[in-house]
Length: 614
Image (cartoon, rainbow, N blue to C red; front, side):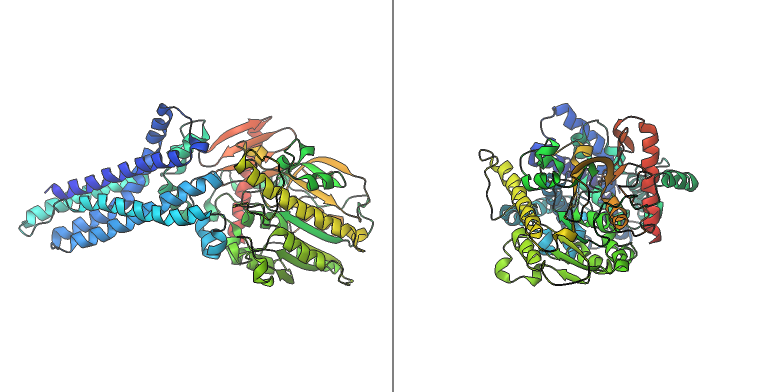
């Protein structure tokens, strides 16, 4: 009578062992990020992650338990092939999750969630562009090998003698059913994470001040499941404060969007060129104390208006574009671009500029369908969109499409078109992205191959931007031009563990239409403030950009807000707080952090409330 119950218990135990070995593989494959700790630290991570392992094992064991219960009343040989098929299925799932999580962690710095699935669904080729040839070849082989090994281990469990036998009496069947029902109740408690009010969540794994150890403790299957189950329930996520209190705090962080009292421009409707630079940061610019990589941007920063306390709102391009073009902050758990029907209701710089007769274009050298980018750009009102398919095949030599110099040459070739209408052209680069393969070489760190590879890619992209701006300076339209240069998200190089520092990016405004002398501006802001700032420069109201503030408005609050899947940050000239969303605690702070935490929570709550209403 107890054999079926023992069979489920054996399956449960094997799954826990698999998850423990999964952690060992994760550490061994990511030594640069999570290695170098004491054995006791890793054992602590194993123990801290055990509740998440139990939850996932409970979900996986539920189906075999149900099969055992059915077999009590409908015995037969059917149960073993059904069990084996199920075990092969979950073995494949575990293998895929293990390999993806282990490989992607080195790029992203957080455990697996729904983000890569969204990327792959929108454009498989673009999603795989970051992968090296070795990864593309070995990845599937490793997945198959792990899946086969796990399947063999679980099939040993299915080989245990089943509970149901044709000779069971009715009383024995009832007893067996009751025992299995008790097992189901235990699994339900395991799925839920206990019998307390709170259900299982990622914060259970956070046991240390060491971020890497907390990440080691997280079960990647649980991380993916948790992300998938929190994709659409926007109105109930991050509801920290009563609605009235959150609204009051948020209102204190908003401002009316006044145009500067004294115009910064020599003409009322300048051409505006917005260059979105892939993965750049201030840490590549010597004038910011960074490495000698982005020398062209550094030179341009000394010729115009440069904001020195500016921050990226997020960590990936699909989060960044709504922040830059719509003034809508990024979200830690989801990308609004995934939801086309919501994204189409976001405000738009391009549409707002139509009131002054602007024509708009969008230039991107990659796959414009990646992450629903085409739908977003079209809804933003760009009347002409140039992407990889607009270039001949012989020019598409980058894994992302065309290299940046080819893209910039295309834009430059169209500069002298005799159009009377003012321009709003957006140019999005892509070459400074993994795998960092570019047709360019500058010896920056010749004795450090990996560092040289990354720095060289940024030096190349920087040179392409510099050449384009110099080409524009030679154009007859330079005197009526404003060039805005901003990275799309926090930098891919150098790797920084300090959350606040890695979000620091430059905002550079240059152009012949600028009336002011070169200036470094210490105002705190982030990408969402570009919308209100640009519209104010040309005298347009920006009230519909609820989250955006004019950086030149002395009455506007001075702060930057940013998010990652694990964190949110709130920074002013006197305070800063980095809040760990998974652990529900302050990770780092300075100044009056208690009020900053309250403001950050109200701000994030308002973002999700707004998202639920779009």
